[in-house]
Amino acid sequence: RGADAVGYAWRDGGPGVRVHKQRGGAAGLLERIAVPDDATQLLVHVRDHTKGPPTIEANNHPIRHGAVVGIHNGIIANDEEVFVEFGFRRAEPEMTVDSEAIFALLEWDDSPRVLERLRGTMATAWLDERKPGELRLARGVGRPLWLGRRRNETFFASTREALEVTERTLGIKLKKREVEEGALLALEDGNVAEIGSFEPDRSYVEERQLPAVRAADEGLRCLQRLAALASL
Image 1: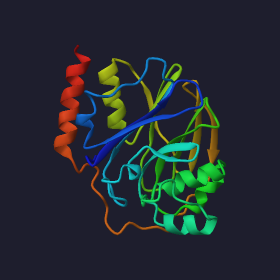
Image 2: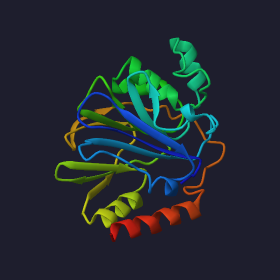
Image 3: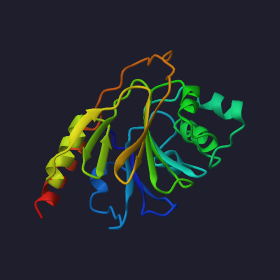
Image 4: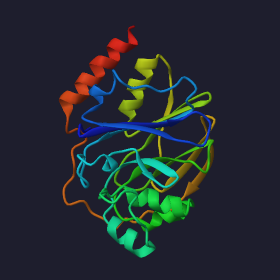
């Protein structure tokens, strides 16, 4: 969708989460991505920034706040209020990205209902170093979230089309479904281990609807390169 920054985070069954991020779009990452064979969980994010300049690396995703490392699609309109209300401090002083409010709250309280404190649009995923075997996903309002499942593997993406690209690239077939608004899913060993719910704040109205894709040429370059990699 965007090309301001790209990043990924992974872990290999232990508690620690490793993060890599760089400026630019995903096409510039495909030749450099390096994830160990024993990685069990992986987050990937391409940023089209709305708040928090991408020139400051800490604003780019995946975002770390304490033990929580996460990615987010959407806009959190009350992030500054959350930091003031709960007395949270930014993970790094120069950070201004709104998404950090999600992971600050989850670092403080990992129950689904804590997400009700947020106002805005959201689809999000995160890893918590206090929970080594778990990856969590949540969908608020205003942004899509899709699951693709296969045996003991679960993929997730913003769109069904992205899961279809995964199928073509890897030569697999996924059972696909859209996650409902207000759902939180915990994944363990590639399967959905727990489903929770929360009532997202629906008061926020976006002043302008962002287009689904704002870097079409970047997307085309990625698809062409993925096709070349899949044919090797």
